[in-house]
Image (tube, rainbow, N blue to C red; front, side):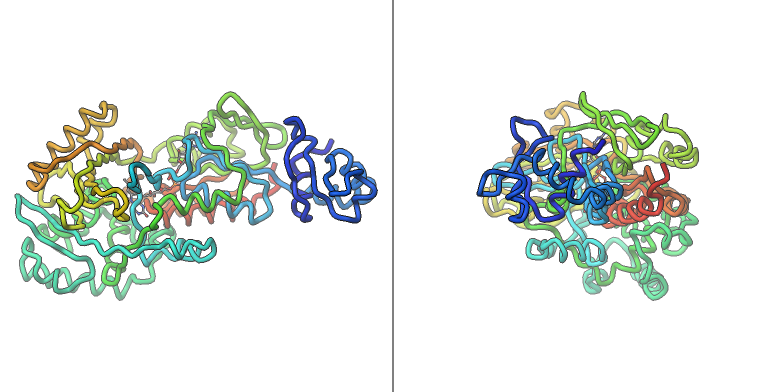
Length: 509
Ligand SMILES: Cc1cc2nc3c(=O)[nH]c(=O)nc-3n(C[C@H](O)[C@H](O)[C@H](O)COP(=O)(O)OP(=O)(O)OC[C@H]3O[C@@H](n4cnc5c(N)ncnc54)[C@H](O)[C@@H]3O)c2cc1C
């Protein structure tokens, strides 16, 4: 028996438009058909035909061609509509798949979600991209997003025991003036950075295969060995921990070396309309189902059955583009012929760093600087960063925003807290670091608690991820930043390689 979905898909590929279902029955939509078929299939001179009628005429005419096309149409479910899922869905559709993209939240974006309210456009997760995101750049061009790209000229201000130390990335003058590290350490840092820039500038930070050879030690051990304790505490840690929330003690030096090689000419950008614009644009090209949390995947003789929000549907292939813990749960009971024991082990063993962000409103201009304040020095530093004017596109609300990012144990403690408690605790911690906040009239605006904010790329993970990506093939594949680097660019790389693996394994079941 023929399914309706490929039939409608076939029609749309031939240029006929599906205008809507009659009495809610998807099996009989109205179709505007071509002139040559009007006489045979519909009485209405406008060309509006009932699909059943049109279908029977077409089937008589070109039955064999119809069957051939049916055989090629594969139905693919993509679970999770963050950057990895949206890119995977877009690419799978481009490869001819009939794609359904499931997202448990009300909107796409995942950890790039933007909160829009009261004239503010606040990024709740990813806030910027750089000039070393080549994949994102090429999507921006292809999707017509280039005109929305805004260059950021933000500078970091490091704070240690209330000493303020501005540091603009890529500015030699600001580096030489930086007061928290001595001249000899700076010269050593420059020498090592220059050497690594020359040697590793070709490293692809989003591709674990490119990082694998460097994945041999932690950032902390590498920095202490080659740069010294002072550079580690005042320059290396503040360049990593405030943005990724994990600890340099636990993460592979491959990340730091790759970043060091790109740092000299790094440029930062965002989307004027919010970081989730990328996902929103990509999701336009597929059938999107938001507010649908996938709860289980079952194996069938041919393909899979997916359960989601009191409903279920069959698919030929699945791309899991959630965080690793969700992917692990959804695939735990699947046979090893579709998800191997090694894959399951890798998914189950992925660790994440937590993050809590709280944002406050304040009158415009009260905090004139548009900077990111970063506590540094020895010890835990539970406040990762304090960003003033964190609504980077401000101007419509008559107000500014200041956001406080918490990491480590303090973030974990606040994961289940009520809003009021979390706002108060975050502000108290931030005021200890940044005395400007003590007297400001701050109004709570927005809070986001993420238990699984950033995958921890501990030593050896890039090597394991490279093997995972190389070995996976359809009909079930995985995408997500835990298989690359915790960036939008990393998520894109994982998605592109997941779709390539899917195409490689097509027809396995
Ligand atoms: C605070 C913060 C700041 C960051 N800053 C930056 C930055 O400045 N630049 C940068 O490049 N990166 C940044 N990142 C990292 C970046 O956001 C992530 O690397 C990227 O979003 C990962 O994309 P993903 O698609 O793998 O996962 P996600 O974005 O997490 O997407 C996964 C999606 O799956 C959905 N999902 C989960 N379970 C289900 C289910 N059962 N059914 C259906 N859907 C489900 C989720 O709701 C989510 O939408 C930041 C991250 C955080 C948390």
